[in-house]
Amino acid sequence: MATEGPCNMPKPGVFDFGNKAKQDARKETARQNHVARLSSLSSSKASSQGKHGADEKAQESKNILVSSEDGITKITFNRPAKKNAISLQMYFDIMLALKNASTDNSVITVFTVLLRRISVMCHHPWSRRTGDYYSSGNDLKNSINDAGEIQDIAISAKRLREFVDCFIDFPKPLVAVVNGPAVGIAVTLLGLFDAVYASDRCNVSYSIHPSRSDLGSLLFLYVSKDNGLRQEAAEMLLFGKKLTAREAWAQGLVTEVFPESTFETEVWTRLKTYAKLPPNAMRVSKELIRKHEKQKLHTVNAEECAAIRERLPIEEYTNALRNFLSRKAKL
Ligand SMILES: CCCCCCCCCCC/C=C/C(=O)SCCNC(=O)CCNC(=O)[C@H](O)C(C)(C)COP(=O)(O)OP(=O)(O)OC[C@H]1O[C@@H](n2cnc3c(N)ncnc32)[C@H](O)[C@@H]1OP(=O)(O)O
Image (cartoon, rainbow, N blue to C red; front, side):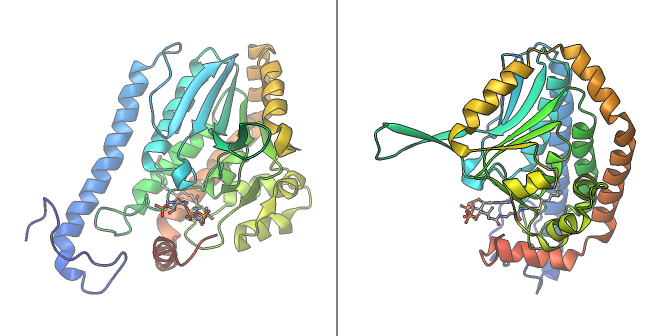
């Protein structure tokens, strides 16, 4: 049986587990391609990191834009057609952007989404509004290979651990400007920022269907703390309860909520002021503030990724993916 080249056989439905035995060879090739893809992304990351010095120009990337101005390095999600779902390439682009930002001349690093301009029938020729979503979380197609099979949870879990570690260890002030709903890992990461500014049109949710492969322990650590909010945190993580920006603020996941109409102006004015503060003092201060919890975060991250690798209920996960991909289920 051919194991390379285009597949002219009728394609089995996504996750159609019947009659797959004949396709073992092709599946193995697809698996190897997937691993090779992950490895090549990983090694291109390493080689680009070698090339990028502290002051070199920002990386070029379609779905993750990086720019630096007024002491602020901006890392911008730019995949609006997919609600800013984070593809494999984007994970690596973000890691590279963080690595570069940690040594560039900027004072603060900010995550945000690209603003889209839409034409509206009103006094102003253009009205500005944010893209739909801050991010819809992990791209659910990341763990599917060319043959439509669930693939390589182990390698993904390892990479995921490295990815989250980049946020835990980031040395400069890290700010999220959340001007749209956030889902899944995009919410988990919020707990690792030094400030999270949200517009009142944003909500956060953890995903109601089990396609979430992030098990939420990192986030629980943050939002539950000792502040008596353990049940509320568990409700979001276990049952996928969607929180408004204000509810997320009450849980300590958002620093401040702004009205959508003034969000951009207020937030960026503030950030530009912060970026004029003494950078070294901020770095040292961040190091001291985070020092004691860092080890705990690394431990929880490692445990979570090990649980993803060893204990993820594959059947529930594949069913949920199948339902999403066949448009039967959404958040
Ligand atoms: C360093 C390497 C690391 C390796 C990484 C391995 C990964 C490990 C796992 C990490 C743990 C993370 C967990 C999570 O983040 S779980 C959360 C995943 N997200 C979701 O479950 C959300 C799914 N999306 C939805 O429910 C809806 O799309 C949504 C409610 C967000 C919006 O609905 P709406 O009706 O407004 O829009 P559409 O559904 O029509 O979406 C428009 C297009 O966007 C595509 N889309 C949206 N979200 C995703 C997604 N998360 N993954 C993939 N694609 C997504 C959607 O399919 C539409 O595309 P088409 O127009 O082509 O159909």
